[in-house]
Amino acid sequence: MVRKDSPEIEINVHTTPVPASSQPPDQNPPEEWTPWLVPSIFVINVALFILSMYINNCPAHSRSCIGVQSLHLFAFENIHENPLLGPSTSTLLEMGALDANKVIQGQRWRIFTCMWLHAGVFHIFTNMLSLLSVGIRLEQEFGFARIGLLYIVSGMGGSLLSSLFVRKTISVGASGALFGLLGAMLSELLTNWGIYANKIAALVMLVVMICMNLLVGILPHVDNFAHIGGFITGFFLGFILLARPQLDWIVAPGYYGHPMKPQFKIYQYVLIVISLGLCICRFISGFMLLFRKIDGNDYCSWCHYLSCMPTPLWSCDPQCNVRFFDNLVREIARNNDLFCLDLLNNNILYIHCITIYSLLKILKP
Image (cartoon, rainbow, N blue to C red; front, side, top):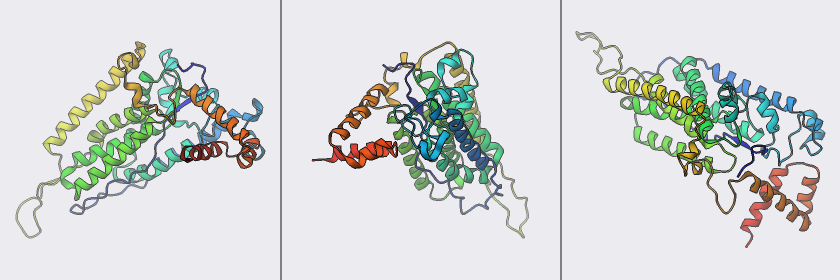
């Protein structure tokens, strides 16, 4: 079991950026918006990460900080406190990380604030790369209002599902919102199916990329419930916010008649109504279960495998992973590996040394 005071952090990691669908060749492209919201979100996330490192001030409370000689008060926490090179758990909690127990006690704002925080350099790098790759193109096509609403609501949907299943660790990251963008891309392709060329190829590529990203969630310390919750929310919202009016026929110049104005088709209206109802029901039921202190794991004995799948290479118990790192460091010292020892003694590239050494041990005949 994981202790409540465990320093481990559940993170939302998003990898493999997916390009937005190209405009259909048989339709005039809509007017593109100048993106400013997604770049602003990028700046806010980076600024808050820098602020978290400043508030954390590792050298003030620890002698085992990483990079203290060059980063000074922005030095990273020890690898046992945070393996992603970032601030401590207490700092993230202070700034608004998601803690389901605190949310139940009344700190409901954490469902929103956690999506703006990141656990480390690797974490924010992958998320912001995906945000720029996917978000800018979507904002150009659909405008800042719809994409901003999609991003915020999807992130909160991910936080809500995470709160129902992750009770012993905290969670931070923008991946719930980013998976919401992916879910919306999928529903946008389906609801605007008739206007796209090469639709099957686009659908297969998008589904494969989504599955690959979700598979990352079975790794330890990754909050896949936030990914799934954000994806489902974004999928519903895509039918509502990203549906495009379509043309049935157009009168060519020189002929009598009136051209038909772009309008939604019947199946699009049906999808909008159903998705709106499901989205509202999802949030109402989710908050009701959360504030009644319902733990989703009590009613789904296998759901924890969606967020971490134990293998011979890792354990889903954070304490076991800490012991693994400790044993590995001692083995490095016993083997007198001068290269790794030098890195460890200087607290430089600690995680990279352990990762490389682990791979060598696994591949060694």
